[in-house]
Amino acid sequence: MQDYPIWLIIAALAVGTFLIRFSFIGLAGSRPLPETLLRYLRYTPVAVLPALVAPMLAWPAATGGEADPARLLAALATVVVGWRMKSLLFAILAGLAVFYGATALGL
Image (cartoon, rainbow, N blue to C red; front, side, top):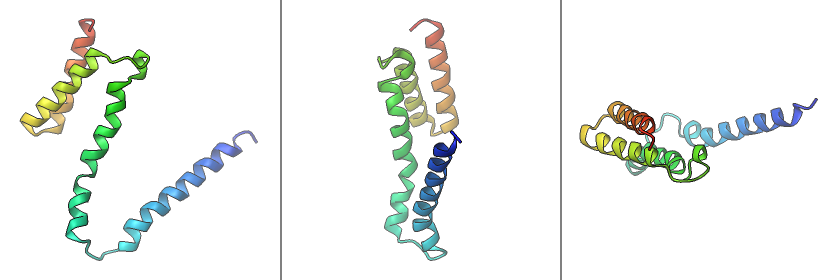
């Protein structure tokens, strides 16, 4: 009986998420979308990923909200490698290598 509110919240979030996505994807159906909208949709991952990562860099919970040089160096390495090599995989691997290397060195 104690799980009732959490399952109600999960069900409400599932219905809400479905309705939000259906309002855009389901109602559009197979009709072609305007070129302007397609252009903006291409930038969605580019906008979402930094929004997810930025709080982890600026106020990491692991350090109590203090900026961490290892994380900042890893972010810098990720951006530089991603920019130069145009490869998401190599950018992530470079960020991981720099983060764990800097952490091992005690930064």
